[in-house]
Image 1 (cartoon, one colour):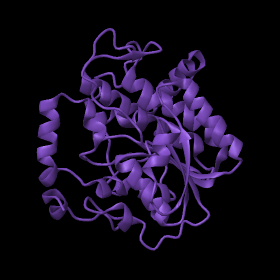
Image 2: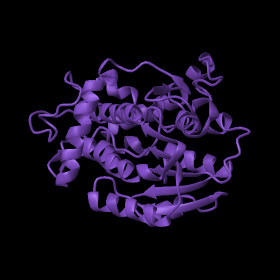
Image 3: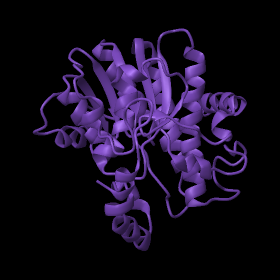
Image 4: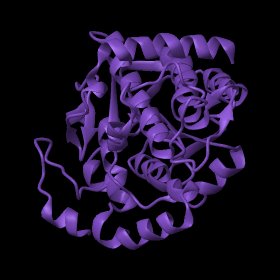
Length: 305
């Protein structure tokens, strides 16, 4: 356990910084439930898949290729259904939506866990900065395409981050989504994570009174392969800090699994969650007018790509 975990207490939920995904699901029987998880082949995505399967759920495991999704869960107890989904390729995302719809089975939850972080140089796809396009637009296409499958009582959980507080001053630079007018690795990552948060807030607003809920999660700072795009010195520093300052992967997966499956999170709506409790986001992360503008702009983007 990290030094921070040992010092941190538990919140109103009974869980806290040091809780693990297994601990927050202890005693839960998820038999008969069906969840979809993106980024299911590594890191906290794979740990979430493992623990959901351990508790009896059927899990649709989405990764860039079927092979990656299938290989990741080999030898793990549980029922897993691999689906290819490259979030930066709209055709791949739409094919994943079609594949899940064709199964004809309702979903108890969607976990938008996948993402890329801090690309050193500006990369553009379909005219949009790649982190925004992958982390937000890809998940928007996938999730909105599957909303009709989400059961009453079902949940959508989007992986945001405390890094959303590092978004540009405008929050979402709707006039610079290509990055052509200025780019910084962490600013763009922060913008994409703010977009994930605002998407969950707006979906939660739209779902008010339906019995379905949507929330966003800060998993904590974790040593996973999400750091693969960083410059080598930063990767080394990140790895060196891990034993003392970073969450473990089981701890990092706890909040998203809690939000997705624990009865204590069943009525939370449009919240920002950290350490398995409601947390406070930035002011921009609570800006529902911005959330509405982002949703409308994303619909326009999706119609074009």
